[in-house]
Length: 227
Ligand SMILES: [Zn+2]
Image 1 (spheres, protein in one colour):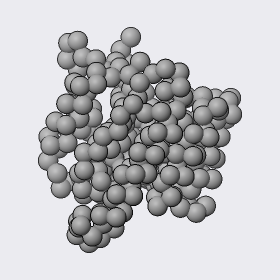
Image 2: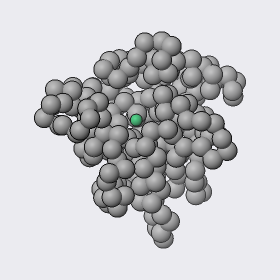
Image 3: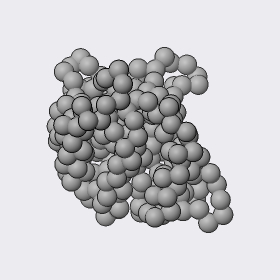
């Protein structure tokens, strides 16, 4: 099988499904990753890529190291503004995603949950679903969304925004790859009890696992499945 992961920021791909990616690649599947926004530049009042050059280079390197650990086939950066995706025309986000879908012909597409607090996550969800609008002979047969600590859990719970997992990947043997990939993102990780801490990532996987009677799981929401 071929998987295409569309993540907003460098680290989302690992936080959302780093253990599952490692599992899928080690089982002989092909995984490609697209990271849509650049990261780091939202820390300033105005987007200043020159000022953040070192941070951006470091993030780029972190993403490449993490991808290597997870056995990913290709890693692509689209370089859109970090946490300012609402300043970009949606069509300009959809088009490159469509091109990658055409090039890679993935069977399964994995992206953000539409109800996340982060605006880039919401927009990328919308762009991916639009890029996957049903057409005859379309390659994508399965679309799933993942949860990202410090975004999915930061949203106010209500029926519209809540994340309802209904697909669990047993990642009991693959958490070590996720945690070591996250170690590459030391600039993005925080100390416990922050949601984006290594401890919380592990607790979440234990909790999702115990929901379905296994040691560690990554949970997904299945959005579409054509069999
Ligand atoms: Zn993100």
